[in-house]
Length: 221
Length: 219
Image (cartoon, rainbow over all chains, first blue to last red):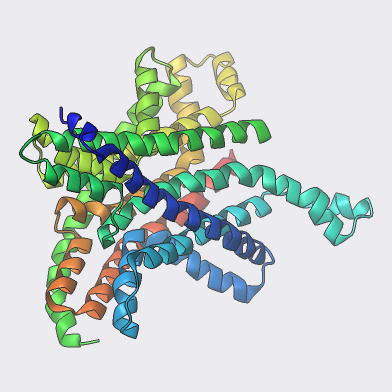
């Protein structure tokens, strides 16, 4: 079946290290996205015409442009434009943060819009100041709705970062290909075993996070 | 930007565009078929099948398309299952999309309040009448936003097909950049063609979302 190749030498460790590279890039991007997304999302709910226009264009670009295309634009376009080299790692961080920020901002905006107007009015009637309204009434509710959604963003980010192999980062798929190439003669079925393992590794990385998001959604709703 | 280069590249990109659209649409169609079947199986809680569908949905929703394609295109042939790159792309997109569609349609079906079923039954409608003319239309309205998002997501995912050597837009762009270093022109055409492909879908999608929401309020 081709699984035996994984137990040769350090092959399994190398595969896991490859997954580690992908996970590292996704977690850094997620962290940046959540912070920037929160800020942008709140700016968007201020309903200022200029911010609205800019953010709508931004969100639409992210909505319709495949991440792969954005990755190419940054990776190849930046070099062409400035004549300087940009590493594949930095371009993927830029692109995935750009994408994640838009996704996060949209989630925040959606949650803010979902808070009924009566919540603000009731707080006013109770004599709370604007700041107090946000701290004690609005933000706790937003956090409850936002938490499962932003955890879901992590799994989507992990899945999306599998694209980094296409701009030459040596991550789990690339390592898999190398292992298959190196053992072409001794185990011709390696392709099946290695890719099935990578399939499973991604599942093991994402599934618990999805389950956590689902659990929180039920519990906090 | 060199307009001569653009003119020269346009037909090459147009051809790649057609291939991308063809595979994208076939994949989305397959995804809808799988999604509808899967959602019905889950909704009616068919024994065993329901569990199988659940497993399938979890497996494909939690893995990237690129990994799925590598497994289907490079992994299966060594075990004797050989399929062409195009079929592989359609099947991969269909399986990924099917898992997302199953979830969206199922949650639409489950979001219809139970009282709707009870009222329909008490009016003397049969089970199948209730499902077809009461539950299904409302469930459809409810799942439109998710379905639109899925279609856009799937069409965007076609950009990874270059990994299994399909001559799609990404592949063409990468090839031309590598061969002639006309980076600006290639990237420009890449963006133009993806915009042509997805902006109308996004636009029609927002209209569909508004229409279906209106329908919900009207009933």
